[in-house]
Length: 249
Image (cartoon, rainbow, N blue to C red; front, side, top):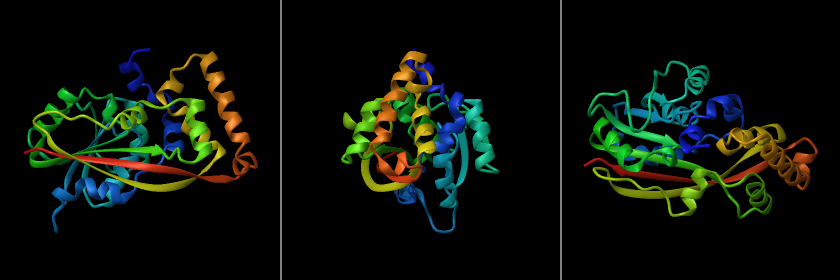
């Protein structure tokens, strides 16, 4: 299975993605956009790799004018149902359907690890005005909690998690001045949502039936060790949100 096929597999699990994936802390999104926010003016933002609109919603809450871009028509269809009134376009970070210098910011949630950093940086810089911002954000489960660490062992680390563990994203010219901040938080999650979280991952979506059965059995073992989940309740799933921002000179 090629990486490009994995990157466009999420439409097969759009419902699970919307149910199982967390949103983004508004503090992290506000930090990414802070350099271009001005009193009395709506910031022009493209959410690229927008998926079902998890990050789009947080940007809208901050009062920005947003367009959502994704290569997967099914994901965009789900986004239009969950975030009403947002223009949507098919595209990628390397090929944006947008004019030159028209944006204050481009943001990407759980997505830059699918992008060619050189081509993506050039294309995003083309669409940004001078002084514009690229904001990149990932929610990573906090594996300092034992059952969460065992959950990752059961289903495998994602592409984004491996990128963060290796030191974070790489950007390229003409983007510059990459900054990083992180936030810790948690969300209550039920067993059904946890199973959706597992199924929303590209490695699981594209797994063979045999590999999927192995992952499911391993996740079942973790669930059995968490009384709140095993009893049909909810448990707090802790996260560390890593946000990065870079500037177009």
